[in-house]
Amino acid sequence: MRVTAVKCVEESIEVAVPVHTAYNQWTQLKTFPRFMSAVKQVEQLRPNLTRWVVAAGPVRHEFMAEIVEQRPDTLIAWRGLDRRIGHRGEVSFRELAPDRTEIVLRMRFASQGIKGRLLTRAGASPRAVRAELGRFKEFIEGLGQECGAWRGTIHNGQVQPSEPSPPRSRVAGWPVG
Image 1: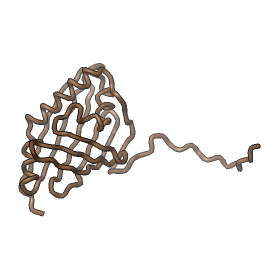
Image 2: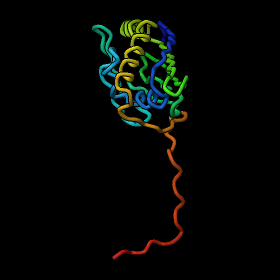
Image 3: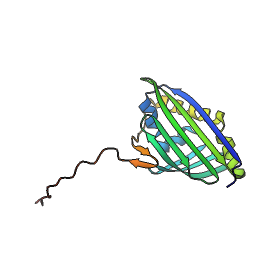
């Protein structure tokens, strides 16, 4: 595969909500179209697999992404599964005060072809990313609290059990009734 464009973007924003509120809301991917102008639809297929529909002007693109690392209140990292527009990203959360959180978004795009270059140019500019983070800030501060949460952990693309399984009883079950 010949890569024709590589772009890295890093932007941060401070939001006036606790770190768990900012993180919990970010895990609600289906709400992204409500505040991110380029995101038209997100479907969570499994805890670590998502399907996205994005548009930049007249160019519309659908792709799959895998969440490869996820640590509650700290980090969500993903990689795109599209061959034409490969991308990786991460969003980190840092408590600044009990009611203030810094969110840092880092993305790396490697695109091929005209459609890939157009989407990368439109969606990966620092200005566009800063604007999308600003809309997230308005959204979460306007709500004041998250509208859902997924507090699971993912490591190397594998969903980790949230609680250890209780030990199995060695006593045979008795029929009831």
